[in-house]
Length: 520
Image 1 (spheres, rainbow, N blue to C red):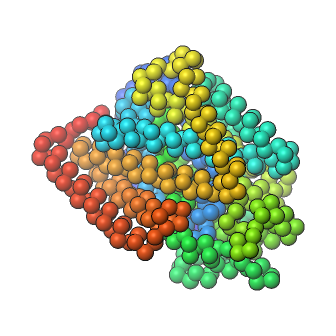
Image 2 (cartoon, helix red, strand yellow; image 1 turned 180 degrees about the vertical axis):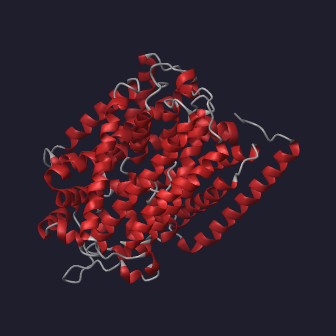
Image 3 (cartoon, rainbow, N blue to C red; image 1 turned 60 degrees about the vertical axis):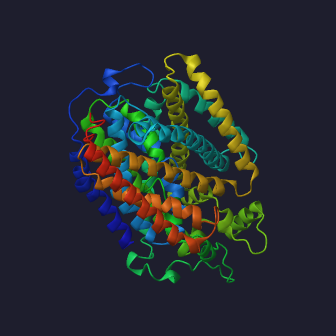
């Protein structure tokens, strides 16, 4: 638990110190924001700062910092390092910068910003890529809350009913003005999510379990002892780590709790609602730090659950047997192959927080993905409308764009439900797509900073890291090429080529004197 408390303090200090440094680079001022200058009563609506923060936090949180942290803790205490360092030096910077650039470009969406600084061809590629990612978010973030709601109310036959209800809500929230539903109920759901995290934090402090620490990170036996009493490796963590190397798989699995490209699609939504640029740091950087804290808490809870027999405390042998029967484990298969993070959320919250606290906590986990799903569709609608120059005051025009998005996402959801391991497979592809989007966002910000003689090093290093991560995942992961032996050479080559490309580009731009493009 010492590593947990150190990590918690580090995130807070990161906001106060490094957040202030990043803010000085952009120098927020008192110019009119898009919410004031371009108010349309639908998407450009000035909202109170506390509401904007809560909406931003809920938008970017989803189940990412929960499910990602749960699965990411299979890699042991190294997850703490990635959550803390990734959040402070990559994720929060990524979110803050994309939000600030949107503020200074009339609330522009991510593909538009990418096109301005990385070229029209890249913009077109990112337009398709981003919309597809947002549809995947909709599919992933329908199924997981439906499973939790099924466990809480309705029994095993109610999944389809909950999916329909969630989709109906998605349609309504996507089409109505942002202050009608999102601006009213999101803050309440955000509070529920934070109460859930606070309740689990108190539970951890009371239990104070002895967990693997960062200084024991080299001793894999510290966190791979997952055997039951009869000696069978029921969870299969050891085998999982052998097939999924820490680099790059941990960096893909833990996305929203460290850095996530999806966040850059959400920051423009709130850039259209901020009353002042000076609020950008607490809203964008602060929401990411808050998400990192939530991820830390769930990583620690899952560490206790997986590595020190915590599952025996919250799950009876009968429940484990029932769950294994549901996923039809065959010889040689392990629970981790079909492990369902929503099930762990339900088990832990119900056991640790009691009925009332557990219900409130699980509601927070239910609300988080649902609210990320509807803002994902809203972002997709606005991105397509911006690309087609389709004004969005008219309801029929909003419907024209939204209906195909919902149909495509529904098809993804049907595939996910028919595949026994669909959730984990779709999550991995979502994770890689998500982090690939962060790569383009970081390079876009780096180009902006370099052109305007600002400290581009703050995003250049994360851009190089995430480029290496996404390339390595394609080569090493069993879900992709599955050739981990070639990964080091490929990663080294891609990193070196990326650095050479950027250096030559920067030299050419500076020589041409085109250094102030896009300054606002």
